[in-house]
Image 1 (cartoon, rainbow, N blue to C red):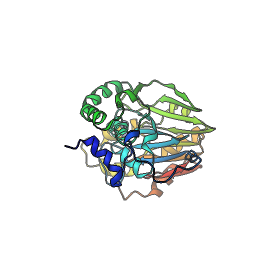
Image 2 (tube, rainbow, N blue to C red):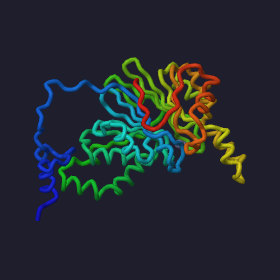
Image 3 (cartoon, rainbow, N blue to C red):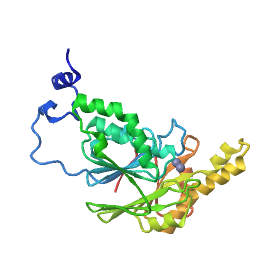
Length: 322
Ligand SMILES: [Zn+2]
Ligand SMILES: [Zn+2]
């Protein structure tokens, strides 16, 4: 009987992909490698998913944003499907180094461990850290049990390294979280009740800066973190459409009050960007994210009331140079 491992060894001859196979099993390259390695890919931001809230939507994927910095891939929030969106964007999952989870709502945390797991199923063999609020280590323990059969099978059958040794979890508090290879990542605790822990992240590198709001109502901590940043990636909701949606709910007033206490309207997004003095405002985590009748211009004009800098209305897979 031919084992799966022997079968995999045959794959190169069949012209099938062998990404991630250990060296003895990998095909010899048909074309010699270039004399010089390709330049590090340009720093860029890719919005992987831009629809806010837990409900899967036809119009927008779940929240996640990718940052390629110095050839290393960072993913900010990991809504369901983040790995697939990264592949659609042409991002090299094997370069995944850090996942930053703003808070533990499922639209942000659903794939926190599935993303590195699928990257490892591809070609990832280097360490990866998932950073996020208290509770993440407990989630990791549960996920390890969930993934155990697959990990142990692929280690034995395909010769892969132990993902559990590659993967670290860092539960975070406000302050500097990472200082590595010219990149500093700083977190601020923002306001997303009833959750006690919800974080915004700021990345500073090579004279550039980007702030990611996560989910939050407008708050001084976010404005302070975003002060003078090149780019603010900010959640936004569109109140007129929300009012239409919730009008039929019996608890409409309290629902509206809850949304306003824990999220940011598009107008307020502009106010935050103006108060922080950022150069560019990128709107994402759209609520409602499934309403095709809301035009980009509706989001933009609401934010532009207060903010006179560049406004980008996000969409899935939008790529921006940094
Ligand atoms: Zn959310
Ligand atoms: Zn949330």
